[in-house]
Length: 201
Image (tube, rainbow, N blue to C red; front, side, top):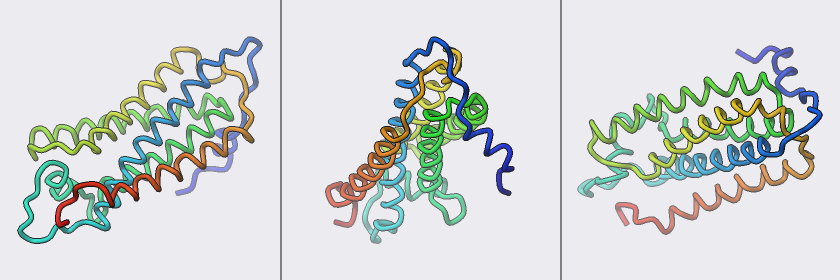
């Protein structure tokens, strides 16, 4: 189902500027974007391992991250959870860009339950690692910390009065950064496959 055109138009329409803007909200939205990039990098790396490293050669012991990634809880059907997480963080990066530009209160209302759901799912996955699988995946924990931080940042911005309290941002300056940084981090994630001590090497 596609988002109704009227709702999409409301989400992408810049809010009216306030008389005495405060730049702190803009800094927090930039922090939101940076955290989303961090979570996306971790999820992209885990997805790359799923697609290009697994399955592990027979006879190679699995411990730590590999024990988590080869467990039955690491997939939803044929799709790795890490890949779902990567898509989630792409959405969060796009939302950060819209949030920074539009300052739209409706976008904040949409984002809050999404990141709250991310926190709930992450808490369950952390429980599985600690209580069921008995192994820890550091990159999975980075993702869990990232989505928790996204939720906290949203709450702080909301408590401040919303992003509408911040001055407008020139999209010609912000958008190149918001496109270039994720692309660079994607290259970092792919390069990491060549240096990490992955099993079977």
